[in-house]
Length: 337
Ligand code: KG4
Ligand code: ZN
Image (cartoon, rainbow, N blue to C red; front, top):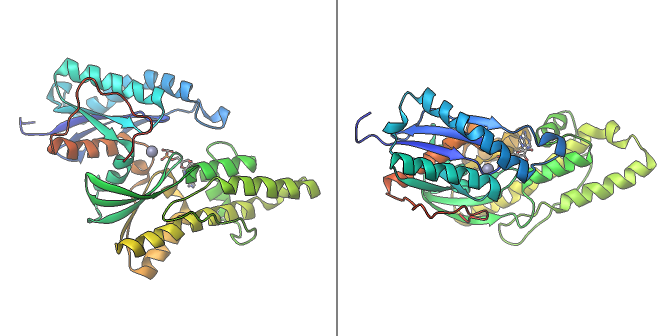
């Protein structure tokens, strides 16, 4: 490690994943993630429990990131943290640690927007999209269409006005009696089902925006009526129900993506976020990309879900531009891109 090397410790603690990563000269060396299982029995993330778990997990996760990186903490050039958007209590744990660490080592502090980092996960490994590209970020907390003009120059061109698509997967899964998070299970059962077996309404919002709260209500009322006639309706139709719900959600995602491509004339297409693990979405996007001549980029799953490697990647670009923050920085639960 010479004096010109740029080595950064990055911390992610916006929701229920505690993560740390070391990046040296733009190359991610590791990505340590502690997943909080405490939320499973509550059927969703409990904010208060999330902050407590971050408090317990953060130091061990950071120690592991530093010790497996082969560099010492004295060699670090900066420390980066997720400033928002996210759960206030969870963010506070990461911000407070980062400030104390920066002060102790007398190194600069870099604040990162979590949504920008999801997009920059595409620069951790090859192949990397070229600018400008459109990124569809889909997870339990977010659904956004982003026009990416440069590493740090992004514009939200469409986003959900209510629930995120991952939330729609999880909430409808709950109605089917599946445990949290239900998204991966819907995906699993959908593989054996008929996507056209049941029809749920496609919500069409103005412009490139999304709305995913309607499907939950539609499924709720549909099931209520069917269950009155046949109490075993769900068990007898689980694969078809999952396939039909998944089909509807994917259709909604792709309708706006196609519109965005048309509107901006961009054929470099990327997806990010936990829902990009969905096999139906991957298959539909791959097929669409072949048909339309798009170049499609999907990061490794490890970099799709919440992780510190993407925070580290964003921090590297901000370091190069000298974009640091002072000790008075505070988290922004609703931070905008
Ligand atoms: O990015 P992520 O790990 O965390 C944030 O929400 O930021 O995304 C988690 C979301 C959950 O809603 C989960 O159900 C969904 O991603 N998910 C899936 C699949 N794998 C994860 N949804 C559908 N199909 C999947 N295979
Ligand atoms: Zn996220």
